[in-house]
Length: 624
Ligand SMILES: *[C@@H]1O[C@H](CO)[C@@H](O)[C@H](O)[C@H]1NC(C)=O
Ligand SMILES: *[C@@H]1O[C@H](CO)[C@@H](O)[C@H](O)[C@H]1NC(C)=O
Ligand SMILES: *[C@@H]1O[C@H](CO)[C@@H](O)[C@H](O)[C@H]1NC(C)=O
Ligand SMILES: [Zn+2]
Image 1 (cartoon, rainbow, N blue to C red):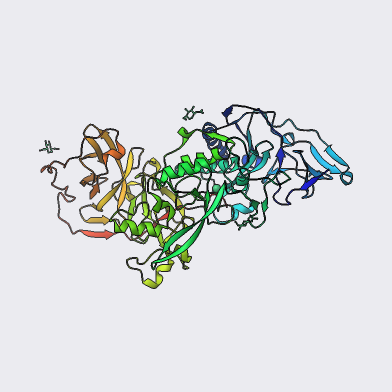
Image 2 (cartoon, rainbow, N blue to C red; image 1 turned 180 degrees about the vertical axis):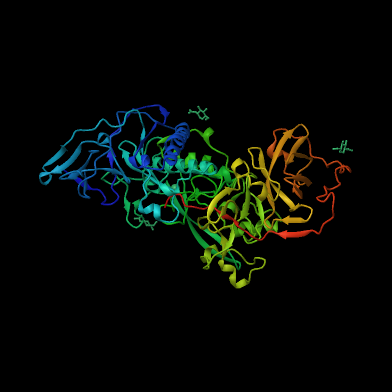
């Protein structure tokens, strides 16, 4: 008998699943098995994980993907007592030398005995190949994928700011589709804050998508639509293993490298090497998304170290796509992510489950194939907005702006680093107020976005404690009356509006101007007349985009004066009248409210410089 030694560290566990020939696709069935560590979490966290996060994530993924039908239960192969895993030619079983381990794990999670196959051993100096010990367990019935979920503070949780990580741990034998995997949530990073629920939910979906197929360790196992491996197999049935990558080596039908001409500061141009995912549906979706017909594939993350790089989409290009490597804002699962799942050869994707991604949409080849420096310079020359990039330094006072979709207050994340950033990511020839010799220290705060600066939502912290986020639609973000410096309203009907001037709060003898200004959240409504902005019960009709609304209202014993810029009605309302100039100001309305109706006192302007509430940009890594 010929037998092969699987790699010591990166062995695969194989399992025979009988696929129905000419089988039809059916809805993916994911079975979640909770580890006892989940029951040991705080009751609030346990309830969040078991009753909300996983059921909702699984529901989404089951609707989004279909899979080929198979027969029989899922049974996991046992781990060996030693690190030697043996295979025989034309035999899907994996044998242990002498004996199996007492316990088998999927990631950090102990697999229940009833989910395990009988131990298969090679004994008596290779004379005996066969089963030994307890027979097969009952396995997992009526499921296509079993997900073991734990909440263990592992060593990896301690590194950086990792929320969770996940991986597959067993592939079936016919198409190499993962049939079992795990997700570990780092207990300290589970947030039960209402405002963070949507972020937590997309993290859970993100992790499960890794385990189902979007993992660099699986690229070499992808199949074509008609069930052929996209990477050639060795005699042992496996793709070649690349020791330096620590991964099975994919063919260029899956991932290819390319060199980009990369503009940096000082009119210099470097060569920047990238990895591109080049499977057919991904190429098609990426070309459509960016409106770049010559794009060769979708760029993979090149930074962040093992775990982040290659396992995610490039952050610079798909910023808030949920399968990029860190959480910044407003994550969406786009058609490009559904496309890679389809290109594994294991699933059919339901594209009506895709969410709209605005980042990079229709921005062309210069956006997707050049550095952000090139794009920013080009937009400046054309006298056009730098969106989605920006160049305002994040400093005090803060210059506030709106997120690209106008649903949250945001700031530009351009900041100073304590060390100079790598040369290939130095983009600035000048920044107002910054000496030329210091320019190499400046870049966007998200390293894995190739240090490109972009506008980002944030959260307010008070003495290190989370207070609220800047998402306009979340009621819990409403600042208390004594802190509502710009007469804002956070509600499901609110959007982010730009301010033309800072808001002034006045009482007879006091005057407050909050130093951080530029945008805020305000309620809007739509009617036959068009879009109306509401500021504390006062309505202001927008006749055209860019119109300035002068705000002068009384609220909580303060008179507020400020000005807001009208958004485009067409961006928010289903039906809009044609734009026209606003009617002349109504004289009876234009008399400002007097904060001192009785006495005329001395007015003291308080520039609120006690910044006890600090904005913090979110940017934790999802998996590392
Ligand atoms: C292994 O990966 C490295 C890094 O991508 C690459 O340079 C090398 O050519 C690969 N080796 C093989 C045998 O493909
Ligand atoms: C695809 O998704 C849509 C929208 O959620 C759903 O109504 C439909 O049933 C799904 N189609 C399949 C084949 O699952
Ligand atoms: C001016 O505003 C007052 C009160 O809102 C209203 O009664 C009046 O009709 C308005 N006049 C014009 C010319 O719009
Ligand atoms: Zn990830």
